[in-house]
Length: 387
Image 1: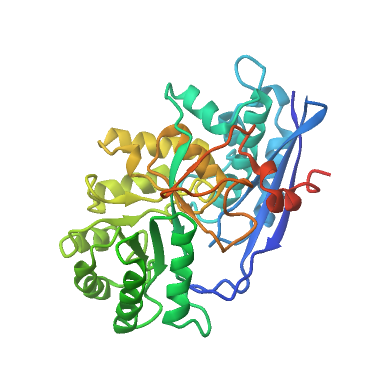
Image 2: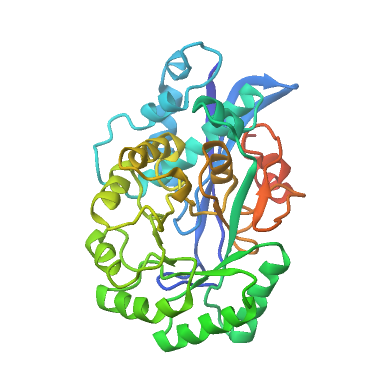
C-alpha cells in the first residue's frame, strides 16, 4: 500500500465581488489528487482536496517541496501501525520535514490542501464517511445533522440595497436561518444602511452576522462596535488584523455581544495565542479556524486540543471556508457548524447533490471519504486530475 502520485492543478475562482480588504477578480485555487495503489470496487482509490477561498493556489509550493517529500518517503513509513491504511499524521510529518517552526504563511495552505486529499483517501480505504471515521477515532458519536449559515452580502458593482435584500431573501427561501454580510468596504453610515435593509428583509425570521475581514484599526473597530450594539447580531467578525490580539481584547470592552475570528490563524500556536491574549469569551464568542488553510486536519486536531486545555467547548468552533471537509469534521467531532456559500466560489463550496438546508441544518449522507464524488459539478473538475 502506497501513495504513487500527488497531482496539482491551479484553477481560477475569479469573481467581481469584494470584501473590505480584497477583490476576487484574480483569485485562484489549487486542486489536488493523492493517488494510491489501493483498489476498492474495481477502482483505484484517489483522495481529493483543495484550498479554501481567500488564499491563492499553492501549485508552486506543492510541486517544489511537499509533493516530492511524500513520494520520496519510504512507503511503509507512511502507513499506520497495522499496515492496513495510510496514516495522515505520518504523511503530514513527511511533508514538514526540514521546515522551520513559525513563519506559517502560504505553506500552511499548501500542506492543508494535500492533507485534505490524504484524509479523503484514508476514509475511502476504510470504506467509511470521513465524519464517521473521525468520530470513531475520538470515541464520539457522529451527528450527521450540522448547522450551516449562508455567507454572502459582498460588495458588487451596481449592487444596491434592493439587490442585497433579494440575496438575503433567497437564503431564507433555501432554508437558512443565519446569514452573513460584509462590512468595512464602505463608510459606517453606508454599512449601517445596508445592515438595516437586511434586517428589515429578515424580519425576525433569521439572524444576521457581519464580517469586516480584518479591515479596522482599533478606533474604527470601536466605532463600529458602538453602532452595531443596537442590532443584536449573531456575531461581529474579524474586526481587526487577525494577529492583533490586543485589538481583539480591547474591543470586547466595547462590544458585549458575540464576536468571531480565527479564519486567518494558521497553526495551533496562533490559535493558542488568540485564546491566551485575544480576550475571546468562551460563553458567547465563536472561533473560525479553517483546516484547509491551516496545515489540514492533523493540525486542526491539535488546535482543538488547545481549546480543551483552556476550557473552550468544541461547539464554539464554526469553521470558515464552506467546504465539505469542514462539514465532515463538524459532524464527526461535534463542532458548532460550518460556513456555507450558496452561490459563490463554486464548484468548491456547497453540499453533495440532493442535500438541502432545513431549519438552518443539513444532514450528512453516508458517502465514502469526504463525499466529493456526490457533488457532480465539483467531481467533474476533479475526475481527470488523477490521470
